[in-house]
Length: 344
Image (cartoon, rainbow, N blue to C red; front, side, top):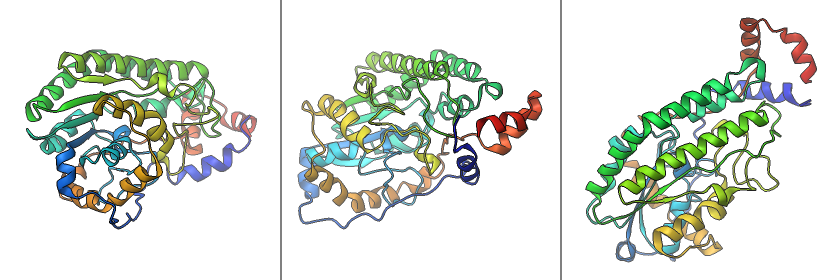
């Protein structure tokens, strides 16, 4: 049994419904930073999308006055630093397709050279599905939650993506556009002490990722965009693998089930940069330093969009709490005290 369950659940109860505005104070620009003119000549890069693009999960975020959780460790920031691109980092944690349309597309122009985007997971309610599937079997309808997400992905998401991608092409007619998919999160084992994902739950969740990637690939191809599928690259680096590129259940909870720094630097960066620029780049110490040195300027750039970004609702995984489990046990006629004693 999971020996530390009570202690972890007690700690989580106070934070599971709260978005923590974790930011770091960006370093002042160094003399090594490239000039705006040089960056403009190298290319104009707009990064669109959700938390898997913004860098949520890397635990270090620019201080732009929002809860978008944009990180200098994200693959977009590292790509721009390595290639000297002028980056407008619009991706925001919690974004759905309508948020990208209403608050991010204005960054695109006829002079935009490069665009990356990942979006759709929040539209399908992945955070809510993970929340349901993390419950013990007697309390969970994981199969129903996954089925609902799959139905949405198959029926409603293709049209939303098609309309969005058409708008991207209209606003950035000359840009190289790369659409980025999602990795499988699980590897068949739940080693986290406060969650109850079964192997069957994990397989169903991974299959839903494969489905959303397939639908996204088709929509991207129909618009002439390139799709990058990270599933193979992340294999062997899922939650509970020996070297995780994706966080398991974490504190603060916003970090949970998102790629960590290795997920961006070793997972996404080689894949996306290779397709976007024609040659993969690496997260060398010089590249990491260049990305960090640009944090203040990027934060200032994003602050002008802050009012719109604050309207984006964070989508948080909510781990099981003792109070919630007691309530569910009562509703389902389960002897909670007996079950609880067995888990300790």
